[in-house]
Length: 152
Image (cartoon, rainbow, N blue to C red; front, side, top):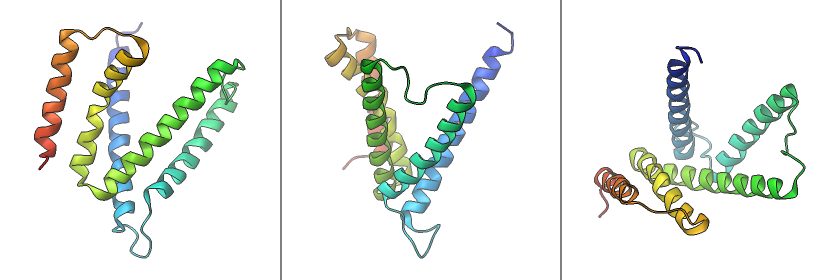
């Protein structure tokens, strides 16, 4: 391991956050109709175009690296990958819809509840244990979301 690996990891995280922020900005602008005065993109239309764009990038990358695009031939693995893809599409659709109907800050802050929801799902479906630190972190996360979102 090189001494620069942690720095490279931080730079990759920073780049990913920047790209995610730019995606949210573009989706909000296209969904509001401000960016394209003659056409307002609906959330599912944005999901379609983003999915098509990512499919092209992923297929090219998979083919260049010699990786099977559908994953291993094991049926259970493919079913898990299909389920993961459906969850991803569901997230994108609801995220883009929230960007269209909510202020951008509220829509983005709501995505910060995903670690709490993931921990709860792991507890319910996988039997993971829920510790006091998990409860404290979840309570702090939800408190922060409520303070920023300012529900009525």
